[in-house]
Length: 114
Image 1 (tube, rainbow, N blue to C red):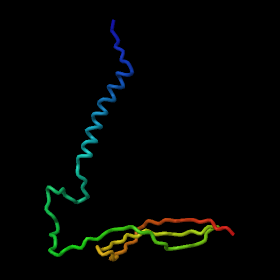
Image 2 (cartoon, rainbow, N blue to C red; image 1 turned 90 degrees about the vertical axis):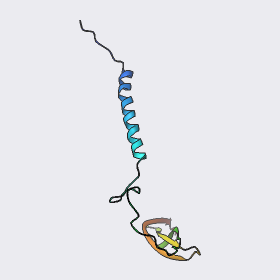
Image 3 (tube, rainbow, N blue to C red; image 1 turned 120 degrees about the horizontal axis):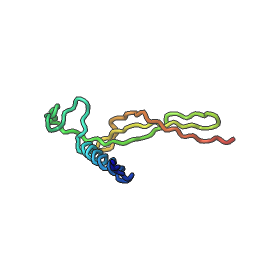
Image 4 (cartoon, rainbow, N blue to C red; image 1 turned 60 degrees about the vertical axis):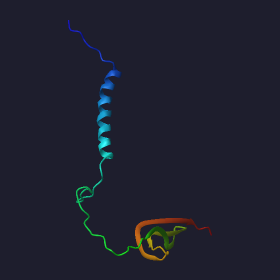
């Protein structure tokens, strides 16, 4: 007679879970230990800087986000204000040198009571 081996469900689950956890941990480790590269970019160790730095003193710019009101309109009994986000680049003395509009908009709606 053949003897039949019974495997308990717990042992069966452990046989599946342990190799899966091992493979997943090594995969995650490889993800976190790599340096992200953009398309066409080489890693820092393999290449030299593409542009030579100029001898001129570069002025450091500070960066701020600002929302500005661009539109007000009444729609279905509500006053709707539209704000657009802008990137502000300022020099060290606080003078705004560059204003770049972004694609972010915020809409605030107020109920009008008569």
